[in-house]
Length: 249
Length: 236
Image (tube, rainbow over all chains, first blue to last red; front, side, top):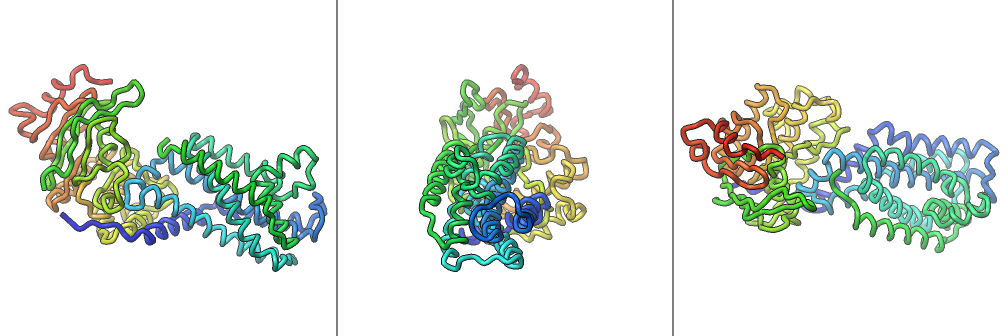
């Protein structure tokens, strides 16, 4: 008998996070959704005069919305599609038999999402600064809180989707939701939407994340109401994913 | 070490379907056990329970003395698994994948040597998605071996391989047993069982219909004849 032994838990999780991060960043489609499309949205919204983005300097409002879009792209769309196809290929089952285990796999995925998000914030933030973005210094800390709460809520939604429907349906739904959410509070402030739609959008995680980041980065506010909406969505989706997530297709 | 793998009165149902119906057998360290049976006999379900991927409806399974369902990372590090569907991420190349899996272990095998042994460098620049079935099988086998496990579960390890590759895999499996590992593999190949296994378990309709050494099971007949006699009418 050999002395086969697992690597320490921290090393296993960081190894998985590094592997997933490299896989995400080397995937052309994922890069398109995570960085290139948000960058195009940022440039387009900043330079154009429509749609109306409401009060505040246009570049400041657009930059905050673009960061919200980055969260939705990576934490929801990217993670749902990657997890859905990994589930179909049996990857989740195989990794569950390794020293990583299911808990380590989820921790690794969470860390990978945060790593990709850090890259997105750096790239999109730098581009926004070039375009004239001046975020409120008082809003940087609450914006970080908003980014983390939004990431948690959208990862929970991604796992709920990826763990309950077939991979092809995950692909279609994740992309469709990404497009729909653009106009439901991510890039467009909910205040600029027609009244009934605005009410709905404020209760969606997209509206809460987008409005929350705009309130922090434009006005330096601590948007408690939007954070509460994100917390409720995160808790509900997390509970549902825990209950219904299936590790194999 | 005797009884590295122990299955006692295992029963596994999926709603009204009985996949495994009271199976009992065990396998020892340093041996290769071939699990044979028609499609739907309960082989993969049994192995999944042993891998910790399925939970017995009743009965017990033990691997290295441990219940594999919810077992610790320390236990999982001692068990290598090759799934029937591979379970490999499709967008990566084989060597980065194997290096990643090696990083989950404290004392993994040398990945380059393992890859050389299985001929993986020949297609090292191909992503899993673009590999042939046989190439994927070799990567999946390497993934199971990378932690130098004490118990190996191989679900149809040579399915889709050409004759040369099958011989290489058989050599690797025998080497693992000589090293002291307990190897359990499912197969539909009588030749494979006769060339590689020390111990044969034949399942039919969820039950064990033969269990013993290769010579003990086949007596003075061929394994194929014994198999067809014991599994006649058992396909489902």
